[in-house]
Length: 594
Image 1 (cartoon, rainbow, N blue to C red):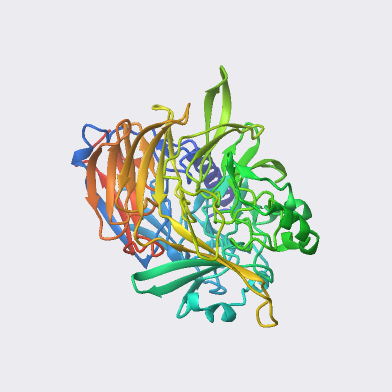
Image 2 (cartoon, one colour):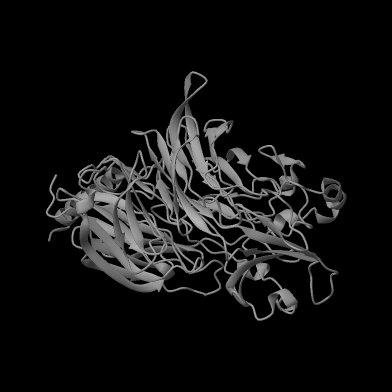
């Protein structure tokens, strides 16, 4: 082939790929972005499947990935292909109509010291590439046509995790932790789905304030405990970083804990509820712990929402470090447990709203923010909403951060912000929520938010100790989740007022998120394997499918050759004891065409 012809064909291919990838973000027939659009609505305008015919829905195809573990990914559907990440960072491309495998990428991890389990929450597709954040804290870009590696860059320095190793042995000698198995510890990892916008790939790190996760053998069954150790090297700093989508070059980096001013104020309450802090003691110890910010936590668990007109992105930040153990981090620990707006171009912070100053309960802002417009004081206001672990949806003016209102609680609130104690203090919502990482959905058609909720109380303990050469921490705090009381909620909340329109209780905590459709439906899964279609305005269950594994991932909907599909990963969740597996399921009406 002559050189001139090759150049022309190459240019034409590049134009087609670029046009296709740009169109994905506005594609109503596919599922082009983590939240379907940059506003994270998780709503599709497709209505072939609707409330009158959903009872006829049937399994159209199934694909088993071979990676049986906690499966939390949102599939991306673009150009007739479904792209999905698995636990341990495989990426699979499937024919969206048949489930036939097109290609598979297997990531080679440089180490296996990740903090937070093997789950990955999804990928991004843009500019002819598939982008994934990995457990070993890297960002990879793959060719979207064949899965070939385009580039692979580190998100953190290879030695960064060594600075966060908790000294575990003295803790395991404590009677409360006899025989405990360590299942996770503070250390950088990455499992959020990246967001790609304006040529930038946005990705954050997790594990900056993870603490120790222990499995305990109790007479009444296995129990999970999360432990924080005060002082010592028991934390890292969380951050969000932007890369050039074409080259992988770092463009900017924003740290959730920015410096000594993280002390902030010494706030006495949150949302009118006392925080029960010993502020006098905190002030007394502030000078001795002036460097606590250097390992202050603040992981980034959420895929950002983007307002391209304002040039803002919106993210949530995690708990401060050390987790729960607060004696060596006086002050509000500013910008942790916060909803934050950043400038897309520079990464500069615009505003932050801290939901829980000086957090001692693990109340990460983990569920992705949602952008919408709301009438407030007789004017339409561009707003951002976030479903919190403490049981409210917070609604802010997304220009200034002003709190417009918060919703009625969507889970029970009991003993909120009660301090940990030596004998144990039961609190709900607890460390798992409220709303955990599960994304909520927003339907402008119904002016409703749909949120998956968790009711799972925990007892919080605090143990003061004298530091020794073998134990470089002066106290520890921990929590144990209740074994006798846990269930879930699915709640529709009025987006204009915050009032609860309807709520349904489920036997187990709801983890995985909600999909809303123009067919007056929402779809959500349960840990026992049920995948449900519910009427958007009443909550009535209109259709159910029983999978072999827990359905604890967000569902998506798309159309291929005139047929609407609803697809979801069924792989359960080890943390909650839900059956783990490796299935991707796609449902459609029999022989349907639009």
